Image 1 (cartoon, rainbow, N blue to C red):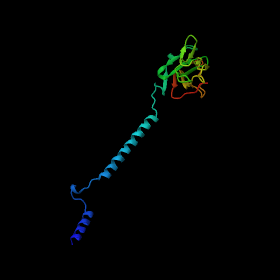
Image 2: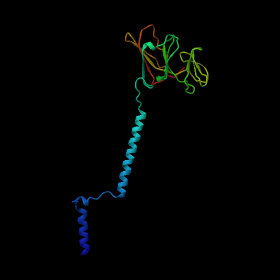
Image 3: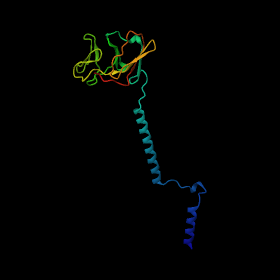
Image 4: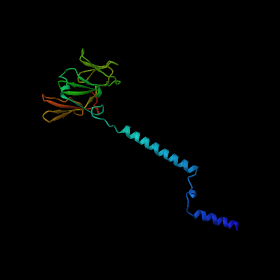
Length: 192
């Protein structure tokens, strides 16, 4: 009879609902570790996803490298004069007989920074001696091609605008009054 009572009490306990907080059973050690590990993995995956999105989706502001640069017409050099260098945009603004160009200020050989040499009237790379004309065309040296170009859009005072083509040809001014020059440093056109 004692066994029957025990069995009856056990079945009564299993089917009964807890009536006080003391009857509530917490997770055992295995369940606790399972929840902690699961929460840790979820947090780690969330951080990794946020970091990936942060670096994969660039957010370039206007006026910093990778974004657009708005250059006033006063900063445009005279035709065939020394180029205007914009270090914050990593570019040289050039005005040739054919038109206006924005040259990427990084050598196509190994990434050095070619400077304008006023004596020789050309760009010269200080690292390995590559030389480039005013319009960025290759002259000599180990560089495989001319300087890369940035696409530009020129807004004229009459409301019209001209942009570079896919080959990066200079934008001709044709004697019109320039209102603003916009250089897109987020994309490059390979030099010739």
